[in-house]
Length: 464
Ligand code: TYD
Ligand code: MG
Image 1 (cartoon, rainbow, N blue to C red):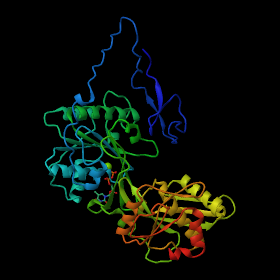
Image 2 (cartoon, rainbow, N blue to C red):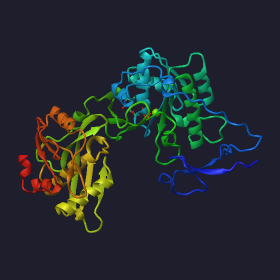
Image 3 (tube, rainbow, N blue to C red):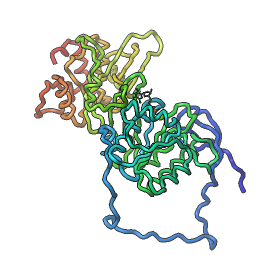
């Protein structure tokens, strides 16, 4: 009998290490490794010889001889949520909703299941964090107190699984949060990787058996005190992250994995007094606070794409001379490496001399952009700030910049232009893609980055 060994587990990604270290070698996070008891003996392999039973040969059937996925999706009616899920909740699927504490996870799942309950779907909300009275108060604020939703405070997975297997099991079940749940046969404390994994495994297995849709809430933590949702990502069918800056009222629900629908789809919400409101026209929202003055420099509107939907956002840049030494590069909402690349191309191909300047870049409204198509808008904001020449207020930009300084085509140019036209923009600076195509906007094609800089240098930008 081997003695109960200790192992060192990263609470962020679940990687197991032989000894403690300050930084997880697997995911690169700092201070996330903690000691846990080894839960069970590692598998011994199949073994050979007479004492071991032989496996059974699998019986294959052709693709079309297997059953089809049963049951339609259940739409909650909260359109932005349903779209991110791929059209609604699939019976027997497990959905993980991750996000920072306080971002609004409990609020959105409550809104979803209360709406479903009102439509007659049997829903249960299991809270391991808040007392039922607190949830009732939240439901009152949301105007959903009258929804026929089953609510209980519980943390024992054994009890919850028994409920799921009972006679009147719900169709949809919320676990808020997975980090408070525990399996009593596992020794570690709730919130550790072993517990979070074991709890999720049991709950998901029961949900699949009974065709229950499981919504798991998971906190993202930076300090590694409790296991993050990343240890669960591969176990669930769908991973949604709820993001947003705490100071902003916008919240973005992003699908990063979905076995039943598209990923990269986002849902936009606004946190109000009465809960999360759907934002069906995010561009209007992200641009709502744009300054009215025409002479603001360092601001450019990027015509972007989030999933299937075009979204217009303002990109702000500030370029200021820096004291000797290493200049600052601060970026919020975009990739820092990508900014470094655009700066290098502006330096090398356009001779802009940004090396002696501090550069700050911000995507307004708390949105995080991942598209390289934002390069041209970023470059325009930078050049505009540096030369103190405003980008025309009525213009949108998009285009990817290559290391040679060329402006490359991006996907869905027409969709982006259409969205811009819808919001009242009249001009666009784009890669040369639109020859022969019609657009209601006055399109200026930029083939190489130096052409953009030239426009600003010679005041030609006013005439685009
Ligand atoms: P919550 O859903 O409790 O966050 P999480 O479960 O992710 O920790 O939401 C917390 C924040 O939302 C809290 O700061 C208050 C705010 N809020 C509103 O602004 N309006 C509302 O109607 C509700 C219910 C919450
Ligand atoms: Mg909560």
